Amino acid sequence: MTEHTIPEAAILSGWRKSSYSGAESGSCIEVLDNHPSGIPVRDSKNPHGPALLFPAEVRASLVAAVKAVD
Image: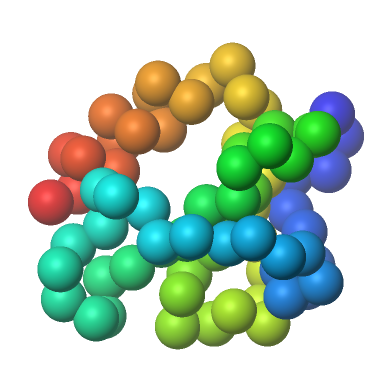
């Protein structure tokens, strides 16, 4: 995988708020399940902006990092 971003995340459908996001409206990330190239993650406040694309094999590390931000 050479690309690490999706320039306009809104072109993809099926985004959901991460269960690890805070309850406050200002600290939400959204993830997209079953993407063929990895795990897209975007800021819910900027749905038309870019998304970061993480390799699927780093899912556990990604979840641990999101939990640690709390």
